[in-house]
Length: 227
Image 1 (cartoon, rainbow, N blue to C red):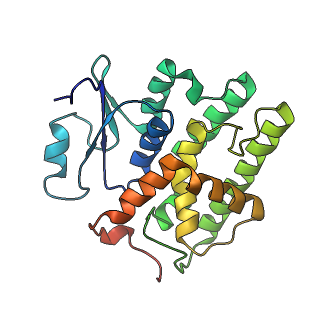
Image 2: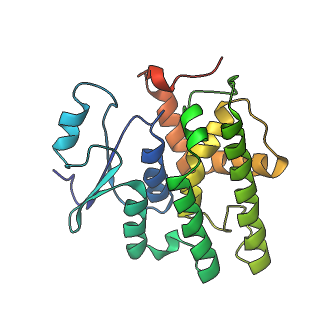
């Protein structure tokens, strides 16, 4: 059941841990889209039963739209929303194409980093032994971010400091990576640190992190590293 005049509901998991839930929530919040958040506790006996009341999908996030129905998967959610809110992507066609490309790369890659460094908003510079594959992912992400910002500067796409000038879906997609790099004691370059500081100060990102840190659930499989 929808609350009042709200036309969208976003079903998410624990904000401390659910990286895929973070992406659409941050983007929708940043762009002022009116929606209701419905948070389900991950990996509890009732999780799938509660989720089935909204959708046949068995993962979060899920967007429930009064007109469009159920949309599962963060990339599908944000592509759908961008049809109604085109400002979510860069205006320049080259930057827009590249923003879509880097989102797809995040969506389908960097598996070592994602597996070895689970998102945890409460983690702060934890010591962690990572594999060579994970180290390569970290280096690749940092290089990718630098490429995006250099291309944006070359094309005059804005100076706000985000990946493509102004905040876009691409930044929302990499927000959980910022949380990962913040949470574990891994080496980062000065440009990466600058971007991380910008992202962590972005109100929508800061609001998500604060909500995650306030949660009390502990998911043992996502608690890694030495505090």
